[in-house]
Image (cartoon, rainbow, N blue to C red; front, side):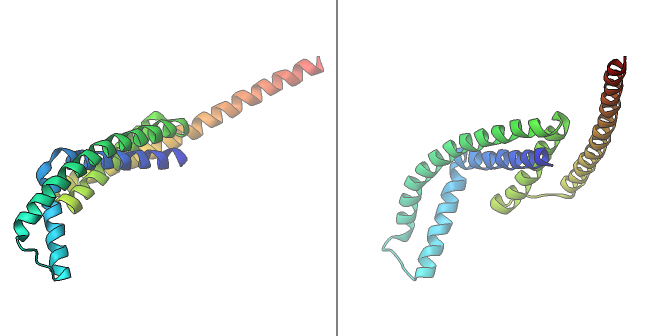
Length: 172
């Protein structure tokens, strides 16, 4: 379970990296977000600068560059954390379980954050595909658990057989 949790964390970090990449590379997204935020602040504070439109454009243009650079470096940081978590998940789970769990959590978190943050659509076809992915992930976890239990049984039999040989040698 630790390996799967680490793989989910890695998938979330990968999705965060993609969000930071989108913010770093799409200047209009950051500018629009900045403009909307400043306009909301001015409305709520009941403050009207002399030339509000020019002030907002100038400020957001400057802030956009800083925010984009920050997001660019955060993208690398999120990827570094993702790889660290993924490698650790491989130490606690099989490579198949870790990889599928990482990919699925990345897929779902990216889709949900795209919908919430950027207003992207999630059509019916996406939901059907998501159901197939979840079904496949569930099947992989079920079969991985069965394989692990059968390997443990084989190892137990093997170890018992070696103990019997050692005891026979002691008796001889």
